[in-house]
Image (tube, rainbow, N blue to C red):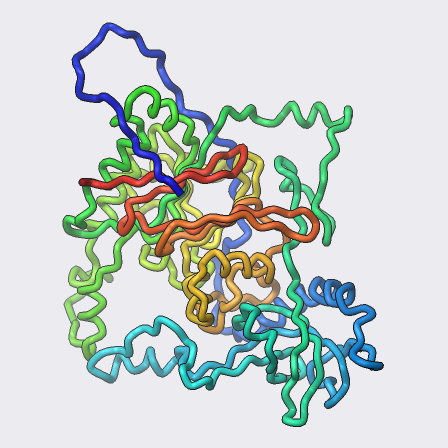
Length: 508
């Protein structure tokens, strides 16, 4: 993709030409609380219930697809039959069954790795992949009755990780393993039309809103859009010292404010109606981490719970200055990431506005009796996060979900992993196995009940985008947002077409 260069004749003498004032486009924005946790959180419950909840929610969808695909399937004279449980599979009988994938991988992390930090010189290094070079990895299908090992050629061509719900068709061989012939996934959930994302949608079809005479009054309430754009940036990486990209941060600020551009590009910048910051805004303090993992040698004196040797307030101060400069002219949505001051387990809860003394003046106020709280100009949200922007259903994460799936598979295709999550109908399938998660008991919020129009993931190695389609006409724009601290790139999304462009800010 060609990256546009912002050029203009800035170094020239003053002129008497009069320029019209430019106003920034307003944003139609409705955040959803899908991933918000209750104030009273409990961690006494077990994590295993999450996978059974996920199987209960997604099993009907994947069974419906499997029944349609394998209704009259036969091999020789034998017709395929459905079995209800994994342990009901019988040797030599052609059948299909639905369940949850579990990857038995010796290189996956375990609790002993965390304990070793307190007893050894240094912690074991983080693995880039969980895959075993000696072929010791096993693919298992499980449900409430037990587990069954899967083998066969289709497994090599299908992306599978722990936690995804699938249906497999085949037969049990003499070794007691299930020889897979075909695999089906739940595929994309139902999708609502733009501006109707809050309405209920029937399963299996994309909702089509007919423009009838009785709908004219409803359509008149839609905000008028004039080529609005959404800016998405990730991995700003503010640190306590000169981070090496402070000049790029300043140029980014001037670009978003339209201060360093000619009139034509200022007009383009004014179309940006919202900035979304997708995780890892604060750089990881490697020195503090290294000190903490060397035999617990750091025992600094703490005063009122504050450890000056472990906490550096400078990165948050620099980030607050950045936000305070933008907020008077542009609304900002802040998604936490792995390195940000938020809880580590998914779903990460919003970074408290008290961390930003200047920017918090733009956050939402306290709720009033009988009134619905409106989102503030500065909106700190969860990770994952979903909302309605300009009538589109938007889903975004800080990147941990894709980074963890990356470790399970041989592929380097991050967009392929994002597409697989959508077709699995789960935005964090490996939670809670290898991705830390809150132990939900009543529902699994990571299951996608409705199909988003836009799905982006932050803190990825490089920018990439694609559009995928579902069996009922669903379309999703996928965006892998690169780390700004490494690439200097910011993604611009057209709110009418969801087409993307890339702006690269660099210092020659």
